[in-house]
Length: 339
Image (cartoon, rainbow, N blue to C red; front, top):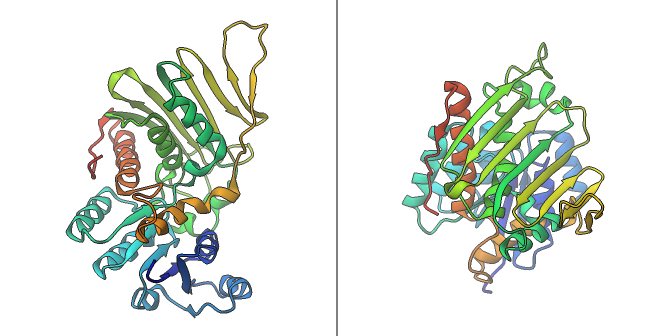
């Protein structure tokens, strides 16, 4: 390893987790931090007193950095990522990559025009030990033929939709802001990409508030070979924050519910479920996604946990789902990046 990668972080909400992952990595140096809010800058300064701060993203983007980690508000992602790529710097981008399909397409085209620049996204459910264990079992064929998957993003944090920047945005998407995690999880677990998606949305939980957009969406994805998946994002549900998941195979069923995760090895009601003890939610492991990107840039591993193909695949499905809601029709998924 020739030098430690110089990394800057924009946005110190979830970006604080990015900053901690960088600071803990031997192959990177937390070189610069940025946030618009003075209170967040003060909190971060207490934790990272030796890291320079800048008051705006433009100043950070102009700095001599190797990697820019973007954790700003959703509607700032596209322009900040575009500037980062144009300057030849690698980008670690919070979900969603962009809010509009045209922006996501442009970002993919820009990356292809800069082949030395790498992109990854913070799709951290891939690091959760419970889901890692499930993928190992699925890859080994233990479930038999997997024919259906159901996943629910139960946000349980209504105020995040009715107050603050999400309520002020011209366009907020519960699909791009929440369902995207479960979409990526479904694609990663199955190793497949859906060919089409149907979707419905509503805003019963946030009706009459400052949030003008859907707070709920449900997606039904059709995969080649007969596999199907239902994904739902509940922005205003009365429920603790949770990622519910069920996978149905011809030999076994997996279920991850609020009380715990378990396996059903038989349809015999007298046989108790087999408990799955792998950790959830695995917050301590979430830094692995960014760490794997740094390792890839340093040549330690060949590919990150979330590469460009994975990041753009999840976005391609989500944009198709938004089209399905707008048109009331099942929509084909047009992938912006080759598998």
